[in-house]
Length: 346
Image 1 (cartoon, one colour):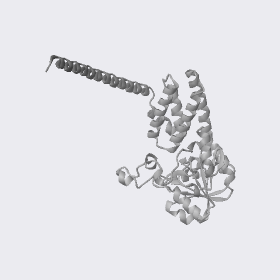
Image 2 (tube, rainbow, N blue to C red; image 1 turned 90 degrees about the horizontal axis):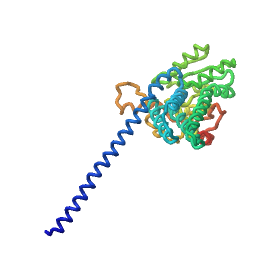
Image 3 (cartoon, helix red, strand yellow; image 1 turned 60 degrees about the horizontal axis):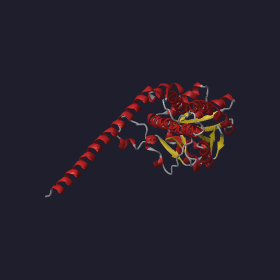
Image 4 (tube, rainbow, N blue to C red; image 1 turned 120 degrees about the vertical axis):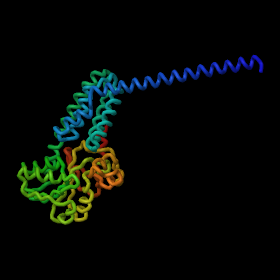
């Protein structure tokens, strides 16, 4: 082997060794930067404990939508972002965390509308301080609208609930509760059947509250007794956890079979839902409901997942079974939901 070949091999080895050392140093710097960035995010999030704040006001508010908005507004007040893009990124992280804390369509829908509202506003301001002030002002306005929506919905629904009507109510819905209280305020007499709504028996809760409010003709029935009393009622009244783009609804388990029964006997089927519950989802079957919402509660604490999946908490009722959607914006046909969603998200 000549001296030239040895020298050339030594030169190549030296270059390779330098590149190898540089690669180690470079990735070491990158990993350290990632660790520092992660620690920085943890420190920033520690300044405002999203989960702790949400849970601390949830029982007080009794409304997941209002609790969600208050939490997001408090998050914005505590956020240390210096740019609009950083604020948007942090807000998205906060919304994803809220969805895990309380997996409800109500939380998801109001969060997404709030986020869309924020991102549309960001493009109109060059000064970040002015942007945050405007976001705070608009957030307050939006929360005020959401707070009043249930009372407005109760007034809209009065046109569709006649005196001396017999109605069937499924489970517990705050919108229905407010609507029935408004009926009483207008001196309407109603004969009300309420389903027990297993497995959490929320129907029993509604029945007890109505009797405390002075309603005399309130009857609690078994979920399996819906078919036997359907011929006695004038209409069915249900709430909604979410209103899909199709115009169908996601609501407490058992809603779908009640709707089928009502359709078979030509009974009116009204849905009471605030507009902030409109969601960008187009389910074609029950399995299209996200599992985090469909199976969010265990009927028994010792059930394994295989058994638990047989006990969904909510179901999807297609638009064909719904007579009208009653909202604070007025009555809507199921076909009008898609247009309403476009207005909400633009």
